[in-house]
Image (tube, rainbow, N blue to C red):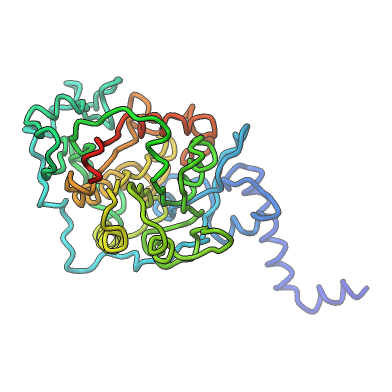
Length: 383
């Protein structure tokens, strides 16, 4: 009786509640919401954070996600927006920002943008192609060479691709090139090479910590980490304490520092992201003067995921990778594009390797490790 009186007293409120529950139930059971419903991530959270499968006209609302790390046997699609450790940038493009690609490291391989098409205007695919670009192997790139046991700057090289327009001009530029791994004569190494290394990053690096098998390596990683919270947020576990990266790096010196962040910042204008990345690199250099820093390119997403999102897509990732790759110098900062180890013939994250289109399945982190093992530096680089 009291319930009926309450309904009669507030009919509009009750109608809103009932319609909201009905629409939510429809969205879930129809597959509109792209989630795994758990106690930590209820259906209401998906509604409030727009955690849905993008459709035509809706993809521009998609935001970068950083889902929990998959465990053995995980196959459920969907991801949750991580905010542990995420600090927001302004996420917008300054009115006077340069909308073009970085000019200081223009494409220098002589290939035209149309060189990678199949003759009918389509993008070529195959084992030697990445997002339509023919990948030149390191030993080919080294024709201009680097003298043995001499530290000399190595400029970042790019390869041209057919120009593609940005689907989110407030987040990233049009793309017409892809940054290549720093052209150094790398050596094969074993796991002990990483004993004096630290890996820093978001949930993708958390997965590497769990499944890499690198038992003596230090990891400072947390779900949702962004470049804006990299130095100041407290996520680095040192002994029994959890401290900021700034504090952790002031306590212990490393020889190798590997960084991968960026998937959570895809909604941020590329120049803003790059400026923050450079500031972080500069501070890390002050704290770790003897270390070699490895900028790891942001890992791609799968073809389906990329096509469904105007922000979280490979072109946005390529644009941001192109800019952070320009920070490498081939002396004490290197750029490593590990995507060649985990992409399919079309240059997207291989759908067979991922459980949500964004993160690797547990058993495939070994591919990432194998790539790193094939990209070691000679000992003189750490002297």
